[in-house]
Length: 369
Image (cartoon, rainbow, N blue to C red; front, side):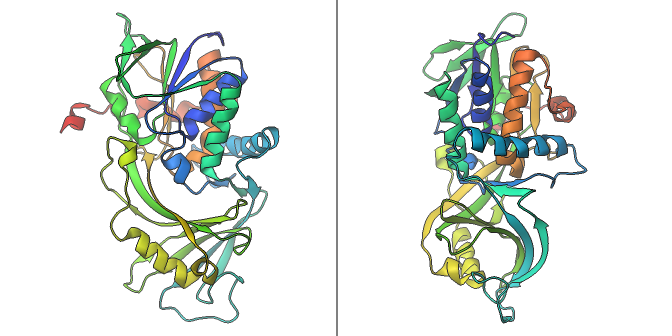
């Protein structure tokens, strides 16, 4: 497909922004349709943690390795507006009522925390600020000719042979296109009304962002933490180069609202996180909380994303379902989708494990129920 062909991308999260960037870098002028905000959902609220080899042995390994390398290249090429930096990464454990060890494992941690192993080095783990990454990559795409439209896609335009030829907005406006990409995170399930796709589920996560400055150093932590109740959480702590520290630990299977603006935290979830943070880190206890967040990450039934053309609908493509690795795998997904749309095949990553045909098609009548 010629780079002059019109391409519509539905969704302005990290995946949509990456697709737009790599298409625009090759001379295309895609149109991105977003109903809420650029990086308005999980792409603006996730941890932004990157790991080069944590998917080894799985179908994601090649995608993750390619994307980890692309993150480093993009930060250098585009001036690093999203605070990319390499990290040491450790595992550990703690308990709310656990014994206090002296001295503490790290100056910023409570003596309750025991470091149990090293998980990654600066060669294999890194972090970005995800909202800045997504908005920065979209801005770079716009500088190359990408257009962002704030609207809701209500339907696809189809030719008699079933080929997709554009989108219909909720205003009734139509935008013609030679290719349409569904990249709406968990809201991609709405596209099952138009295309034969499997279900994409939303898994809800809660996080806190602290304004820590340099108090927490540059080490990521993955802990096992026992609450006073006996419940065990798996907190993740990511100090970022912008002076913030992101912490998560609590997930749920709450219902996905139709409007991304309607995502709210579960009752009591952030209070539990605050109690945990005070227990494991005096540095966190002493610094302000600048954001209490909740978001839904897109998850497929088998844990793998969809990155492929849609069978039976020429001109339609899908890129979603990246679960916890959305920020990590966004660049390689964007590169691969640009190759797939413009060249007919991805050159750098094997996309065969990510076809939608591996899973049963979702019945859109279930959305109405």
